[in-house]
Image (cartoon, rainbow, N blue to C red; front, top):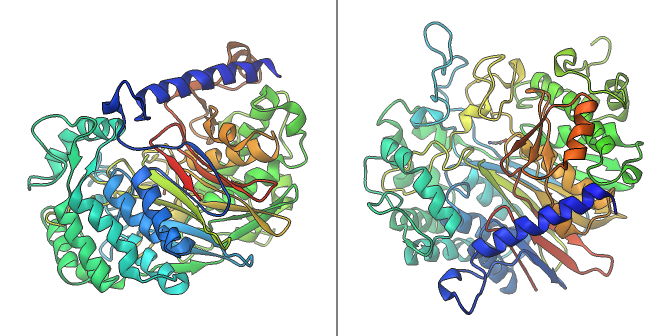
Length: 576
Ligand code: GLY
């Protein structure tokens, strides 16, 4: 085996040991350490759920066992995540669903947040045209109109099998009865306590006198009441009546602009997926307002034809090629991608092999191209943090891949008074000003400028892969700008580098996004020799915190399903 790979495996064993030691795994000598049964890898015969929290995974499994399909389980998982994983699971945010049914037909649902009616292009600039610090990130003005409840409702109306009430109930029970917080959740609540207090003077479930610790009970009565209304009234239980009143009242405390009309008029949109072929596999991913599907297509088209497999997993050559492809794809993202309903995104051109070939004409295999000498391409004809992912595959073979978010950890940090849920800070995903990066260092131009009712550009990349006309894999991740490269790496790890799914998800990752011109890698991911090789090629490696938090399901050659949850979180896979 390649020497680098050996080192990665040693690193992998160390981080796995670290997580195993800090995770609540069953341990007779230390019963306190066990809160949940977290399973990182599961092989099952017919159905699988993988999510960022074991209680959400369990909610999905129980719905499947009651005869629900993948969409039913999705609804249960989504609402359970809103209770058990409030940093990203949500009803105050939005997301995307990629769906493939047992017969092979595909669809996507866009339930991304929308800019409120009173939003305008310069809403985050001061009188001198400068960005006002944090205005798009924290507080009431940072929120777009939430889409999650409408998304769940619309998906269920279209494809659901069991009664809606049954699917919302597990989340209500979790909120009422309380959940024991994991070590990671306790740390996250404590780290954000100052902001929780700053933006919420009312009584809420998250602010308490003593620091949170593992095993503390989080009871969310206000949230349970909102979920009850959603259970009983469907979308109207959120977008109208008492919940809408609570949201608008919360907004009016300071500068928030979400109105009753904005809530009532929110709509989710069914969109044709981005589909493309790679080495005999068919990729099905999310179109705009996500940049995920288009950038993924660009990346795969740019690397296809190169001997990645021979170069090996995380060899200097394969990292170099990947980086050069990402440099070009992210430059294109900056210029060309935004909400299709507002901007003529050249989807066909950007996802074509001819365009990828043209973009890679100046690729040199022996030296990095400095990002300041790369710009976006011209796809027109001459005339012309925190987020979370879950996957479900049901016993019939229907599959969903959903990424959902309130953007940063705990979104805008605003908890709706008497509603008990966090509002998103998705407005930061717009380009507040050309040339000024957002929290992920992403730039944007006209295509992603703010406009009323427009959806902000996303990097969420829920993806399903098909082989020989059959479901092969479902995958996705949180991570802002790093989502696309994370999904790309997990898929290439399986297809090109032939890694078992567990290694493909758990092994260290890297990321590159054009600007800043830095090749990020997880701590310990690259050996000293590899770092030297990459520097010699002209790259600037920089170590950083974990990249992505993947959930994935793979169909094995014998027809069984393998589910893997990432070791970078409390992620859990269950199946039967
Ligand atoms: N909020 C992160 C994303 O949508 O890409």
